Length: 329
View 1 (cartoon, rainbow, N blue to C red):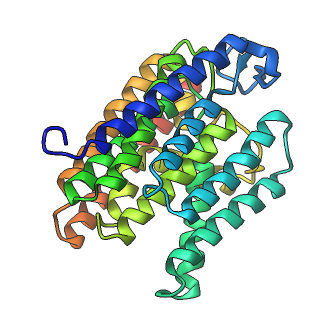
View 2 (cartoon, rainbow, N blue to C red; view 1 turned 135 degrees about the horizontal axis):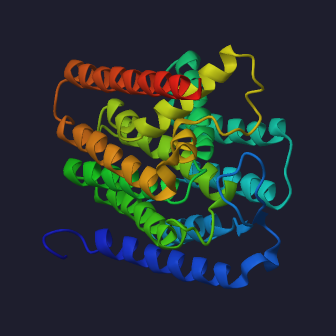
View 3 (tube, rainbow, N blue to C red; view 1 turned 45 degrees about the vertical axis):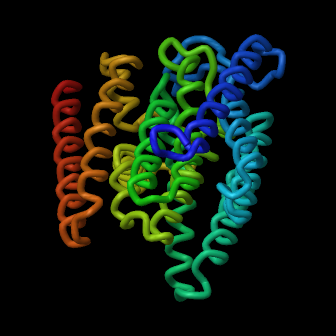
């Protein structure tokens, strides 16, 4: 015990941090020799080739922690994470068809949700929740396009999960969430602007799966309401979802990569990688803090707070769209 809390709550994140840090440092030393490189194109926000192997160290450290602390990861979560990590790493090595990647994401999500909820909920509920897991798995990848953004948001988001789990008394669940945050901090040491390494799909897709899955598990285990994970990760959810809908309504090919997300437009508009990341950190700290502070409120009050944040996002994005449209005339 340390400061009245189980030692596991400290040793798991510290171990994860150092495994991730040393692995990512080694991957950077390997440089381009693995031939898994992000080559700049007309959509890119970086100017030179950068290795995108950082997710191997980030996710690998989380896997090791999950194996050493076997009571932290349940089998469905571990297997689902293994599926999405494997297909994502294969995609990092050589681009795979969209249908194949989405098929694996769907299998991983549905196996997880069926295992968790089919005994107590309807198929409609299971399918709806499964689609939600698939969406956050992919939107996390959409939002991984700027130095330090996804890494920092991961550290903050899972850090808040850990705080909420600790307050609810589930130390095992808190430990794995703090471990994911610690691994992200190790990655961020090398990914904050100017980035020396990117996390790749193996990092972003896997983290998206974990964000949705652990948020769902916290709700299932009565640690928090469903509003808490949605609110904590709402900066990512709002940007990705609104951008997706706008592209869909304009008839764009929604499966193709682009640079129309709000964070990408902020960077191109002159704010830069560093300031965009810092602005996103501040936003997530405030929104996540709101989620933690309102965790003890009634469901109706939490719904009202979440709705107010949703309206705020829409107003801010609409104002930004109008400003940019006027500026481009």
